[in-house]
View 1 (tube, rainbow, N blue to C red):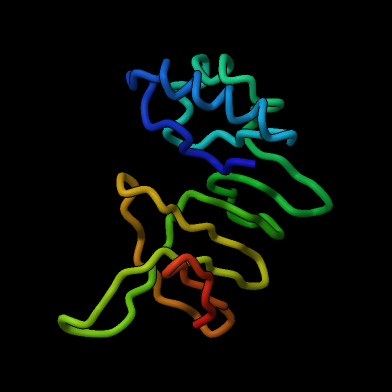
View 2: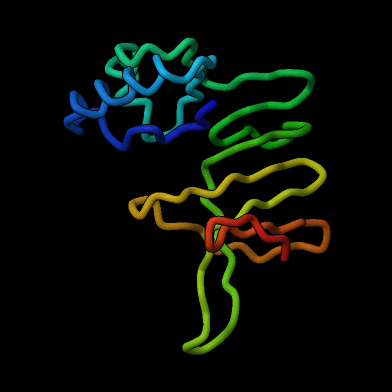
Length: 140
């Protein structure tokens, strides 16, 4: 399942990427679901050609909402819109790392693309933070 912003614009030249994606999904025997993100909406007609098993605005399974940007009041959601990063260290010895944020109502997924940037979060008391560094997921 991809939680949105699979492509950035309907104007992006996608033919080579579509071909590579179709080869990959043929090799991977899995169900491929795209939950549309804010950048995908304009390209949604092109995305129909990608052979996803399902394209949806959101998906709810067993009380969990899978959404790019869930509506306020959603009981529990896994989402990809925020692109959270956390700052570690200070001065010249600081880094901004993509992170997963997990609490009682949300799991926020990071983005690892250089194009997406990131939103620096300030963890709250109930947040559990996991960073991706050196090919590992590490709890802070």
